[in-house]
Every structure is written in C-alpha cells, then in structure tokens.
Amino acid sequence: MFDGAYRGRLLRIDLTSRRSTIETIREKYIKTLLGGRGLAAKYYYDEIQPDSEPFDNTNKLFFFTGPLTGLPLPSTTKFQLATKSPETRMYLCSNSGGDFGPQLKAAGFDGMIIEGQAKDWTYLLIQDDKIVFENASGWRGYSTEQTRQELQNALGGHRGGVLSIGPAAEKLVRISYINVDTRAFGRGGAGAVLGSKKLKGIAVRGTGEIPVADQVKINEIRRAAIQQLKTSRANHTKYGTPQYIEVINELGCMPTRNFQTAFFEETDRIDAHMMRSQYWKKNYACYRCPVACGKVCVVKNGPYKGARARTEFETIGLLGPNCGIADFGAIVKANQLCDEIGLDTMSTGNAVALTMELFERGLISRADTDGIDARFGNAEALLAIIELIGNRKAIGDLLAEGMHQVRRQKPEWSPYILEVKGMPFAAYEPRGFHGNGLTYGTSNRGACHNVGGWTIRAELQSGQYDRYALEGKGELVKTIQDNRAYVDSLGLCTVVRGSLGFSDNPKGEVMKAATGYDFMPELMDIGARVYTLERLILNREGIRRRDDLLPERTTNEAIPSGPTKGRILTQDMYSIMLDEYYQARGWSQDGVVQDDTIERLGLEGLVE
Ligand code: SF4
Image (cartoon, rainbow, N blue to C red):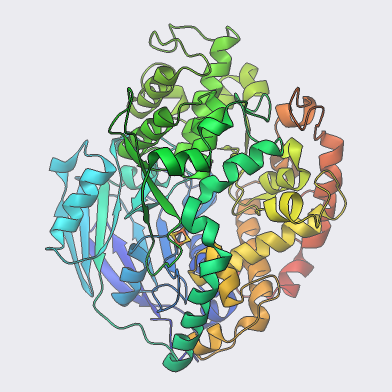
C-alpha cells in the first residue's frame, strides 16, 4: 500500500537475554494509527498489563518514528516514546527531536521496543541491522552529556543519534529524563525506566535511504515550506520559546512562587530580550530544521560565570518566577545542573517551588532541607535543592518520588501541590485562561500543555475565544488535542506543521508524495482515534473523572494580585467545561470511553 516513508520493520531488544529480533509491523496498524504516537500507544495497549509497575521487568519502552521522520522536509526530527511512567504510575507518551529518530529510520526501523532488564550496566550500539550489547559499568555516575559523548565515540566518529541518562536515573529518581542528542524525552520520568533496566544509553546509525513516493513533489514542497518558515517563524529563530515569557506575564498567567500568584514583577530581568542581548551564544537546530529555535545561553559574569544551557520558556518559568528567581544566570546554572544530573526541569521547578512554599509557611525546616534557607528568590537554595533531589538526600528523597507520592505521604501539603494525575503543572496559570485548565485536566499524561492542547493562541493571542468563557472550551481543547495527536504520529515538529498544511483542516500533497497514500482527509480522525486509544489505556489503568480534576489552589483560591487579580476556576466552573469535553469525545460523564465511540472511531479490532 505504501510506496515510501515507512520501513515496515520493528526492532525488539530483550535486555535479559541480550537478544534482538526484527518483526513486521501490520499494515492495518499503520493505516489506522499512522505511526509515532499512534503505534506506540497500540503496542503499549497490547503488551503492558494495567498492574505492571514502572520499574518491573514487565515494563517496556516503545519508541516509534512517524512516516515523516527522517524525510527531506523541514523538521522531520520527531519520534515518540510510550512507557509506564514512574512519575505518574500510568501510561506515558513523550516526544523528542534530535537525530535519533531519523537515524533509527535510516537503519531500517519504524520502531524499537526495549524490554527485560540487563544484569549489569549496558549500552547498545545499533548500526543498521547490527545490534551490539556492551558493558557500561565504567560509566556509572556519568552525566547525560558525558554518556552522550562516550556513545558518540563508540560510533567510531560517524554521526549518529544518541539516547543517554544521567546519575538521577541510575538512582531511580522518578522525574529523570532521557537525553536525546540536543533534545529530550523530558516529562514523566522515562529516564528512570532506562535506569531500572540498567541501560545507560543507546547509539544508532543508519546508512540506508528512506524512500519517498514522489521525490520531485517532496522537493517542491520542501522549498515552499522553508520559504514560508522564514517569515512565519522568524520570532522562533530569533528568540525561541522564551519569546513567551513577557507575553504570558503581561497577561497575568506566569506561575509565580509556586502558583501563589500569576505576575512576576522582575520579568524584564529574564525575558527574551534580556536573554538575547546578555546570554545568547548561538542557535541550535534539530534534524533538518531551518527554524533553529534552540538557544544556547552562556553566563558571562557573576557567580554563575561559565554556566551554559539550552534554555526554554518552560524551564525559565518554572525554575525562575515559580521559585521567585529573577537572576537569569542562576536559571541557566540550574538548567545546566538539571541537564547534567538528568532531571526534567519542569517537574524539578515545581518540586523546588513546593519546597520553598512549605519552608516559608513553617511546614518544613532546615532539618528537612539539609540546612538550606529554602526561601523564594534564594538562587543558592534553588541549586542546592536540585542537588538534594538528584542525590535523594533530605527532602529530596521524597521529592524524587514525584508529586503523586508526595501527596500520598503528606496529604496535609495538598493545598500547595499543583499537579494532575501526578504530573506537575506546566508554566501557565489556568486561572488566567480556563481552557488551559481543561488542558491540564484531560491531557493523557497528566498536567501537560502539549499533549493536553496548547490553547495560548486561541485563548490569549488571536482574540478568537474569551479566555474566561467556559462554553466552547470542551470542543476547542478536543480539536487541539486531536491535531497534536496526529502531528505527533507523523514524526514532525509541531512548530512547522502549518508550513506543510497540517492544521485542524489538513490540506496539501505531503502525505501522498511521501507515502503514496493520501492520509490528508483522515488525519483529524486518526488524531481522535489515537487520543481515544490512549484514554482506553488510562481507563484500563483505573483513570476516571475524579482523576481529571484540578488541584485545590486552582479551584479554591483566587489570584491575589496582578492583571488577573480575583480570577479563579472553581470546581463548578471546571465541571461545565469537562462535561462538554466528555460529550464532544463520546465518553461517559465518568470519563469512560463508550462502545459506540470505539465503533465510530474505527477502534474495534484494535482493542478488546
Ligand atoms: S522548531 Fe525547534 S523544536 Fe522544532 S524541530 Fe526546529 S529546532 Fe527542533
């Protein structure tokens, strides 16, 4: 059926027996679920039992590229991961750029499943069909970057794609990330799953050509898209995601001091203009990306001189204002520290902010913080608490277990914990735009602004929606989620999707030219199918309406100051949006996928 883009093969690696096998991916799965996130969810559905624990040897990591991964089009860098999350204890989907996905595809594989547990620390070398298991015992304690360099060397100087974990993942810190070249599988603690399997990293190199159905058309589409991106994404090229710091703050939606308020008074010290003029060193790009939205920042003066990190909006927001920090140098240093240890900066920022609020309220003391004066705004405290988490020391040992466990062990701290399903909030305040609250509540991996739906443009920028309105938000969030689900299944970066026609109403010839099959008219339906398949997994793992609710601070406390002063998103207000959302999805009022919805979306035959 497909003349290009897919390789049709899956690499399965068993760490226990140190064996690898190659399987064929059924055409029906590709036709109905596209690739990437869709296929990862399907294999997870088939192979992970609901009661499987994240660190059991029954847990697996499902990596899948999409049809566009590695193709000669802009930003075809993405690939997807599904696993049982150590942080949320349920299904996790995650996406990353970098070179690994395109290299895996060039090696001849659409996907790779890692299962079992190695006896000793191991790394893997994949060079086309040749799979080698090597001993990594000497790399214990290495940072993500040291490990990446060792793996790159192991490829004998050839360019490849590399996954690596840091020391936090070795210690099973549940907010550990997987480094992917210059990008990451950030949220959900997938790094700790690799840690539990004693797999320190993987390097892959592919030398094969990825076929396309119509090379001439692909070249034509590429030229037009690159031209369009020069203007449509000029701000991403100049400022990257930090461009949103000023905007989000001015609109009163910047998480400040553990989401106690939503406006940070010193944003001019940390915004994109400051970054660009004082700290920016160079841009960096994922595979085949003309936008190059990544910003390498270097601290030139002061106590953190020499610190260097790839700093993004979410990291700045959550390690900065949410911890009361207005020193950009300290944020870069904290970012670097998280990267080296291997901690997700977003969950870490939330964990540090929680610690600071508990400390200021007198609910914990220096005895809990290893002697640190853990007040908001104390940059040294920010760095020290990150070390405590990475080393599982003092309060860091509990924080390393993730917010799910923190709430369980310390229910009296609940009013200060900002999470849904165990995943802490992203750097947006949902009381300031209510569709964002629905995003956090209904995202299939916990409080995530990407999987859940990025409503910033619709609610805050375009004027299309009243940000405080409730009606219409269910439909809006569903549409954005479905769009994102199919883009994640394509293997494409979301930043460039518009240049290739991948909107809510997909148009153009990309899919036909790439695969020989015109997926375009079906893409939104595929997005809805993928999202619903993921919800079926969550239902099977016990997730219901009660798990889609927002935390107390959001529903019980009005924002006390700033442009959104007085705003609140009460449980009753939230329920109006949630009811509409469930109806739009065809789920019951308890959040359970209904049989007629399974049939309508063509999921029968794919699920039991
Ligand atoms: S726009 Fe940014 S995140 Fe997307 S592919 Fe390009 S560099 Fe990577």
